[in-house]
Length: 140
Image (tube, rainbow, N blue to C red):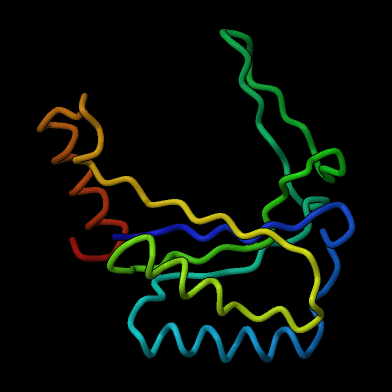
């Protein structure tokens, strides 16, 4: 099972550079996950001031809203994609995540949906999805 681990930030920490200590500890943690064979991807994100949101509202043209998103209570600061046996294993790994400053924080764990999770997935769309995944991974 693949899981997306969403590391949240907030108005006070969005755009604030992580300390050298946090970067070093996160590097060690990432190395542990690589050695365990569970880390598929992981990145920090630039501040929301550099971002944009595209808002869809019915049949109207999408509206672009430029950052920063100071009104948001659920900004994403970074993410990991982990391959774990199950949700419990993913949770156990994330409970070990470094927090050297002892700050309040929140990390969300969501299972990545597979084609088989969608009851309306036709065989044709499933085949297309598989082909596109292979192409994007450089396999085809």
